[in-house]
Length: 472
Image (cartoon, rainbow, N blue to C red; front, side):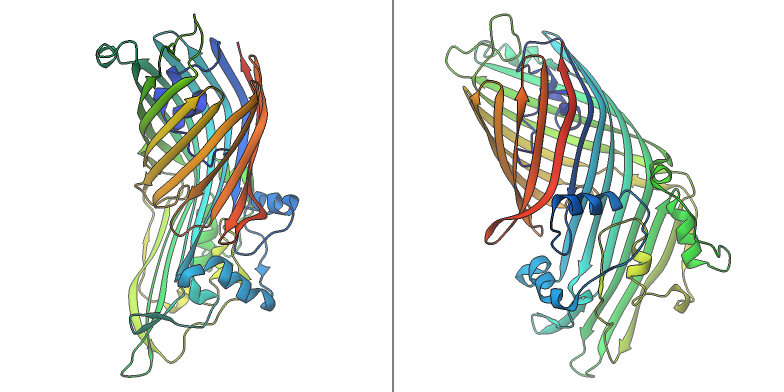
């Protein structure tokens, strides 16, 4: 997080299992075992500014609990919200919220190959809001006037147990034995999904220049699994399930199926001058080198088998004199919050034709491809990553994302890190981090500040901390 969010070439601890397993073979300290417990991080973006880290963390925790009450927009905030979230005349705004807990991680380092085992839980919530939900001003799209009141929300819980290894690829290393090292790594993982929600609501108005009326296209699809299905059935069929179910965080985390995935990567290290290998430590560490890495992560699928439910309304068109109203509600991404948020735009009882399915739901993992480079010269490191997300998901933005960052050590045990991220359609951020890194333990922390056109703001989007990390 301190380096902006990349790390394809940078990470070398057990965390590399989930980013680039090849880096497990790289050693930057003299140790045989690395043990880590309770590493926690979160990222929370919002429609409106949130003052104070305590308020933001409290709102972030709301995403790990069932939706409880509405958040209302003050009338005076509407212009600020439009300028903040629908900049550059965008027809929609995208938001991403994440929680990640690494329960434990163990790395066993050997001279020719290294092994690692780790368990983590991820909670992702991503949503997209049409500008027409908050502004009645039509968008001019090449002479055609559009009001977009569409809405998408994905929420997913994944529990993962990963085991992997990395080793030096001897054949390629033999070509230039003293100047470079080629490493491959692979990490299969067992994935146990928790609650799942995927809502796609299409509601677009296009002005018909001939009739003067609005052509309205509307469609709705919702898939759920786990405890969230009970609330969905209550909403769509209240005559069958008249009472709202009562549930909490433990219910959201409860397993709802099974799945498998794999992470894999390669790293090529070029050492400068007479530097020794960073892979073996009998004679010392390399401090002048270039790493080039490529990885593929989250390739796989989960099967949501506990109370799967899908409600689908095919696209329908109609002619309307007026568009839907603008809302005074804020949306923050809590599970089942959309039922209240869409109350003014969608009523399932108005549709006589719909489909209901109750069969296992197949959900692809958030697969992505990463490429990264790290240049190290003594106590200075400069890194850059590019990531491309293949599968639309609740954890990562679609398309390309760029990360960049640097690390400098005024003292060998005191790292100072900073970085940033660039993603089309999302506001940027700048990140900072530091801590204490000794030969036997690490204590680290990092945070991210929202960045806008005028530069960094005081809004803390995310923070992370390592509880315990030991080297034996």
